[in-house]
Length: 161
Image 1 (cartoon, rainbow, N blue to C red):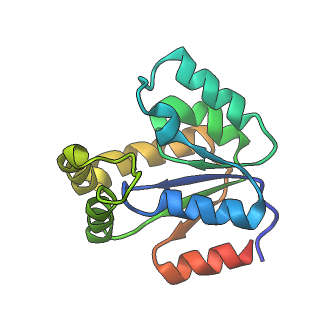
Image 2: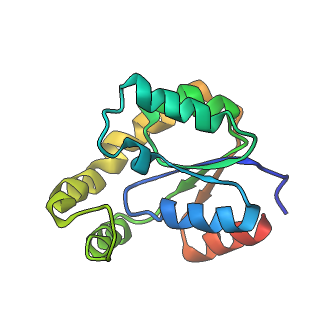
Image 3: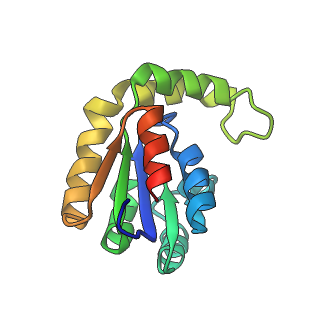
């Protein structure tokens, strides 16, 4: 059993299952999901509006924060987090999920974005992960990290909450 956590940051590559896990954790804990992709959609990350929205939402006592956005948000999110969950899924799994999700009804991800997303997934471990890790350590050095690689890891983590 994990110690009680009320503020969780979910990190991982596109297609790793962050949003799916966020929904499961919200059901399990009752904490609201802060979906950074949905807030960002149609805005520039560097706008005061984006940051103010995130600052307000992350000031709450409980939340599940779904998304990376490390450069522009970790100074706001990491100091308040109780736990960071890294979804370390294989690139092929992430790519497959990215392809499949663009065909789901009501999905905000569109086929026209697929090539960009697949390039992002391809370079994630080389380009994004090191930058995210460095910023995680800068803004939340004492925040515990759980790394989940498999469906069984994820199921056991959710059950332990």
